[in-house]
Image 1 (tube, rainbow, N blue to C red):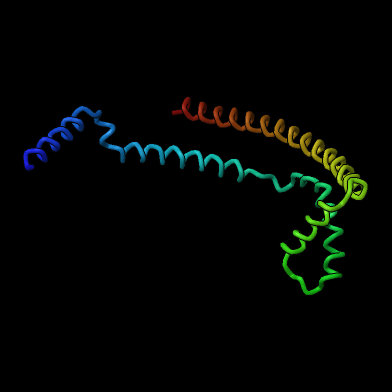
Image 2 (cartoon, rainbow, N blue to C red):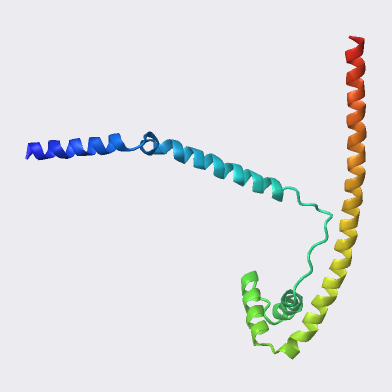
Length: 157
């Protein structure tokens, strides 16, 4: 029996010897993968950090327009209920049970708010484009001034 164990051990050693070196060092691979993941996470954080507080908020959908009115009514009928989730659930059930004709005024209000939003966002985008154009000109000027200063100091030295 001891011989059998010895044979098994030699077979394992030969299999390990045949494997490429990278397969035995799995830890290095995992470290490389973790570095890649962290770099992508950093990129996402940078993108979300650039939100402009002056950008107009998106308009509410028809359901949220309905919920604004429903909250007032629900709180009058149920003054003891403080949970926001209870109001949301009751509003959702009521919205599902409503017919298209009953939903129509809320959808009209939502469409009106969406039209106003589109006007605001187009004005906002135009303003951003004009600011971007102005910013490019200023940066070109400042770069040329800096380079001119550097060249003068080099000539004098």
